[in-house]
Amino acid sequence: MVLLHWCLLCFLLPLGSRTQKLPTRDEELFQMQIRDKAFFHDSSVIPDGAEISSYLFRDTLKRYFFVVEEDNTPLSVTVTPCDAPLEWKLSLQELPEETSGEGSGDPEPLEQQKQQIIPEKGTELFSYKGNDVEYFISSSSPSGLYQLELLSTEKDTHFKVYATTTPESDQPYPELPYDPRVDVTSLGRTTVTLAWKPSPTASLLKQPIQYCVVINKEHNFKSLCAAEAKLSADDAFMMAPKPGLDFSPFDFAHFGFPPDSSGKERSFLAKPSPKLGRPIYSRPKADIQKICIGNKNIFTVSDLKPDTQYYFDVFVVNSNSNTSTAYVGTFARTKEEAKQKTVELKDGKVTDVFVKRKGAKFLRFAPVSSHQKVTFFIHSCLDTVQIQVRRDGKLLLSQNVEGIRQFQLRGKPKAKYVIRLKGNKKGASVLKILATTRSGKQAFPSLPEDTRIKAFDKLRTCSSATVAWLGTQERNKFCIYKKEVDESYNEDQKKREQNQCLGPETRKKSEKVLCKYFHSQNLQKAVTTETIRGLQPGRSYLLDVYVIGHGGHSVKYQGKVVKTRKFC
Image 1 (tube, one colour):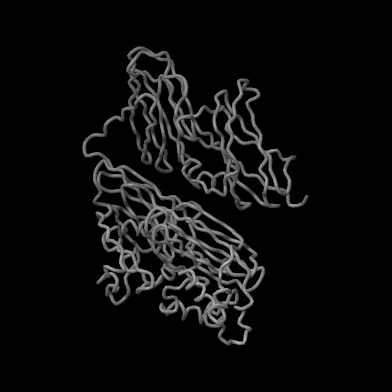
Image 2 (image 1 turned 60 degrees about the vertical axis):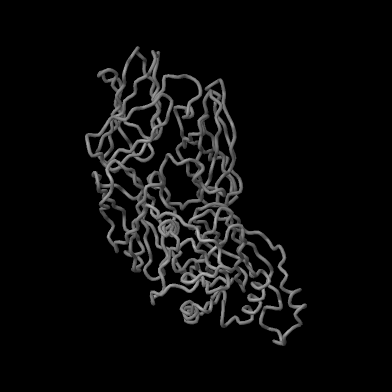
């Protein structure tokens, strides 16, 4: 199959005016090619500026190719996994002179052709493993033959690929607003009302868009492709396509994509061949729903079950290109049928709590034995939440909590504690809480009073930045991550970007700088410094430090934006 792909590539490359013409793409011809599905029928060539959908059999490597004809060409490649993690790698090979289209056109002996198309290893440009929507982008790429290799080791799956040499002007994916979160504005026993900020793609770029809302009980989705794969988890979906047999990456009936306009099923779905086909796996229909609502940015989900946690995702879809972008999803638990019960806290166990906007939640902690002190750990993931603690009816504590806080109260034999959590006016609150009477190692790591990251301005260079942060007497693991941001990036954007309870496992592998253990018995000396190298001149970077406790729960320090020197 690899040899066939290379033969196809060598056949297509001389026809520069008929296939890819990079970077000087003929838009009229390009649109004609996209409309003609037969042109890319079972093709290994990625078209410039179009998102393709394809399928991977488990443990079967798949390769795609495309050509950049001129040096210093911008290049962007985006890979969207759907229902399984992917391993993918992008590499570069020099463009063979035989494929430049300047030859005589005379056919060569078969053995000589085979020698010419045997692939070399090439230069690896980028690799990734996971289920995130990941991309490679370069403002100046050399000419040559680019190879994209994809592998799924978990199961048969499908995915999407988008490649372009004009990333500045294409804007293939709809843009998100400055606040990409989905808010829960109203919560009932069987209904939840969602609201979100509109996409600039419609208001500023004047492109047609629609919003699709996905509801399920398991988790949030990172892409619409992943949600559609889960939505189609039935017999028809699991009937995998057969390479070379009526299979086109532009026609994916029953694979999470709409069927063709005729409404007829593909032949390999209607009458699968027992000799060529794979086993048909029977899977129960997923408990998931997708509703596309046009361009409205508020929606009420109805017919939900009481006292049930649901996950809500919103995707903005470009109606012309059918590409989509995911908002930051949310989750909520519908109200109980009867009066809401007080949540019982177990000693030393972390409990996740959701408090609706302006709402309140009551928790109860009753230690089973006498105790000298009780410690409450509160980690507010989103916005500020108010906490009140009463012991046997007497108010002991009333404070607003943002980020992570620890409160230690004097104990009393057979005492019972009632905790009241009150949400704020801005939106719903998500937090983690732990109550314990035990000393020693806890699920939450110990924190210093000051969780800021300090940057040393005099130690800045064009390619590095030096920062410091405080530790404690307890030995903990610290991991530091970096992310390039715009110069206009500020604290408000930093808070809106993501749930603060999300740990380092949600970050891209490329953003990780290092991890190390640190502590000091002398608190005055419990400070550590680190120099982040390999930065670009005149660029701004967001630095995040995570401290990971013995129980595996991580807490993020306050992020710090640093800017490298432009001239050195």
